[in-house]
Image (cartoon, rainbow, N blue to C red):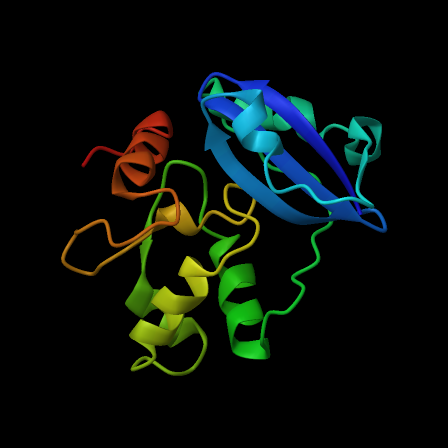
Length: 161
């Protein structure tokens, strides 16, 4: 496993990788030290192994539309969740979809709660834009980084709530 910590306009973001694939993104923290917390032994700092992803992250958090160019590995994620998360990657920058729409795309329109759970367990937020998934009635719904962070990310993309 390897990692990189990058400074963005929103704070410090940690990327985690293995075998040329992104396996985790830690949402912005106020300090580099906070972002480094939890990295165990056996992990090496290796920002160069992420290619252009660190710069893409900086651009995203500076408010620029970004199409992330990286391979991802969804470790420990079940098949339904994997499909739901990959479906979320199709939601364009500056747009939103609903939990119900993602459930319908999975062929199970009643699986709204399961879609919400899949988004909540997303190990690669921002790159897999679970923040772009909201309730059908327009409410934000939950987000690992909190509703305020979800609102800020959507506002960054030009979506008002």
